Length: 521
Image (cartoon, rainbow, N blue to C red; front, side, top):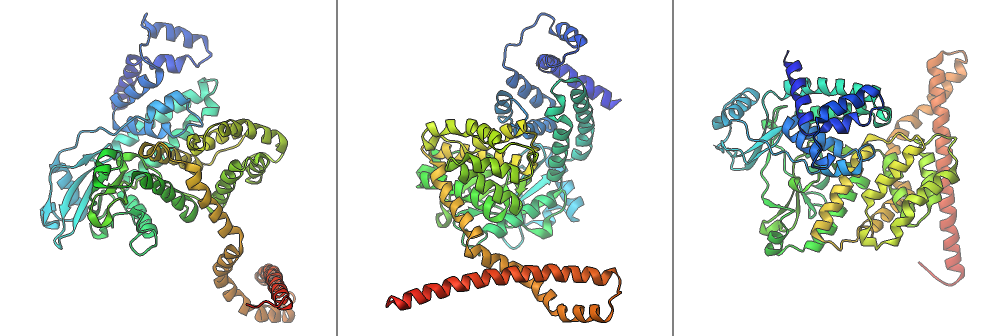
C-alpha cells in the first residue's frame, strides 16, 4: 500500500512539473498522445525541460536528487541541456536529530559519544542525503570528524529502487529509443553507487588508499592532503577521520587574501588528477568544489584537501594505456591511430573499417584545433569520442564514463581558478612521461621486477618436472599441465634472453664505437 501511495505521489509531481511532455512525447503509440493532450489541460510549460526535471527531483527527495546526480554523469545517454541542468543538483538536506545520531554511534561503536570522545559537537557541521558530519575530539587530543549514516536509508532506498526499476522497464519497452538509452542499466548503476555510499567502511577504505598514495611519506605529499582514518571508530554506519582545516576551493577571493598562488593551484589540480588516473589507476571520482578544500594552515598553505570518498574510480593497465595513447594521438592529430586504438581495444566490432572510423574521429576532433589550446576541453573530447564510438556499436566501459565526468569536474574547477589555464600544456608532458616509462627501458625493468617473483618459484622446478616426465611418460593430466606451464615459461625466458642480448649488443656496439673514436666513459 505504501508503494502505491508513493507511486501516486511521484506521478502527481511529474504532472505538476509537466514531465508528462518529456516522457510521453517520445512514445509513438496513439494512446500516448491522447494521454499527453489530457495531461496538458491547456497548460503550457514556462520553464525548460531540464529545469523542470531538476525541480521535480529536488521535490521528490534525497534519493531522487542522488539519482539525478548520477544521471548527469551519463552524457553519452542524456541530452546535453538536461545533463547540464542535473549537474546543478545539490544535497541541500536538513540534518536529522542529534539524538538519533548519538544513538547510531552508540549502537555501532558500543558506547555513547560522551564516553568515546573527550568532546562531541551535537550540532552537525554538514548534512547531505546519505549522512551528516559532527566534529569531535579524541581522548588523546586529536581532532576528528565523525560521519554518521542517516537512519532508515536502507529501507527508503530499496522502496524507491523498486519503483525506478519498474519505470525503467516501461521506458525500455515503450519508448522508441528505450533500448539505446539502457534505462535498466542506468538504474543498476545507480543501485551500485548508492549501496557503495551506504557502506561507510568502504568509504573509509577508499580514503585510506588515497592517503597511502599521497601520504606524508610519499613525494606527492606537497600536492594533496588526505585525512587519516581512525579505524577503531569506524563501522558500516560510522566513519571517523582526521579533521581537516581549510577553505573551499571555490572561495577564490579568500584564497588570494591568504596569499595562495591561484595559477599554480589550478595547474596542480590537473597534475593531481592525472597522477591518480595514469600512475595509480585509482581516482577520487567526486571532485566538485564542495569536496575539495585548500589548506589555510601556515605550514601547509595552498595544499589541496580531499574530502568525501564515497565514489572512486579504478582503471586497469589496459584502460590507462588506452586513454594515454588516445589523448596523445589526439594532440598529434593522428586520427588513424585513434581509430586503431578503438579497434585494438576490442570495443569496436572487428569488421569495422579503419578508414571509416578514422573519418568519424576526424570530424569529432578537427574542429577543436581551430580554437586556442586554453579553450579545448579534454572532457568534451572524450565525451564526443564516446558518442561517435556508439555509432559503431561500442559498449562504453562504466569506469571510463566515470572518468569523463570527473575530468569535466576537474576542468571546470581548474578554469574557475584560472580562466587562462592551458590544460594541454599541463597534461601533455605528464602523458608523454607516462608513455616513456611504460614503453622504454625503464618500463621493461619494472615489468621484469614484477615477474621476477614468479620466475623465482617456477625455474627451480624445471629439472624435477623434466625428470618426472622422462621416467613416467604416461603420467596424468597434472604432469601435462605442469609441462605446459614449463613450456610457456621457457618461451618467456627465451624472449627475455633475446631482449637482453639485444640490449647487451647495443651496449657493446656503443662501447666499441667510443673506444675506436678515442673517447672514453
